[in-house]
Length: 278
Ligand code: SIN
Image (cartoon, rainbow, N blue to C red):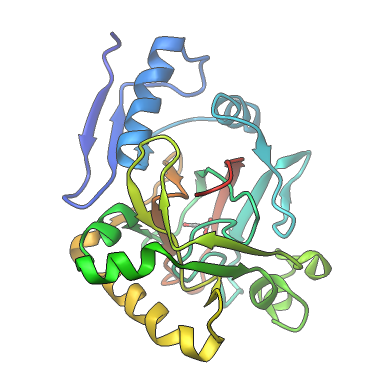
């Protein structure tokens, strides 16, 4: 056994893992301890990691294939690392709404490993929500109704042409012509590894329930967002350069706060491929 410490960071979700240096190759046993924590908690944090892009990639590759995001700017020389940057003169940020990454893909990404490179003096925290608890705290009647439903997720209205995202993000979001993905997923999924049930819709990418219009879907989607984002179901992570958050897209949402006008925030994100959801 290693000497890592795994400490919860809130009553709702998330653990911080101490005494590990991710710039070094991890032994199989240390990696399995970290993996176990990731599957159990769905959200793990590390602090004070001095990682080069190659170190970041080496750690990410232990978890699976890398998914190259088609819309985000890349770190120079590293196509597999997305640059999540907000410049001092920029108004909007990337990820400033509740969502889970890549739900618009037929096979959504498993998780994202976000490394802080430059953080504002104050602000720029990320909120997370626990989608197991969101499911578990629904009434039996609502669970039963949602159990048989599917929903359509899309990238078009977020990353497509005419959304203004590219201009507002100083061209850090691009390729609007590639925003053609729509995907249907069950509203309640069984996590492929933990085997727990989780609510799998999100306000950013879920457009409508299958067989329902957008207008009919909106009130229920709004209700599920309100239900999910109750304080006791969420947590907040304060970044410093060298902090890492690694979230499981199958059982979490996240929201990057945009509360640091006039300052720069720069993160490197690597996204790991997932598997079809059922
Ligand atoms: C994202 O949505 O991937 C970005 C999250 C963040 O920058 O905190």
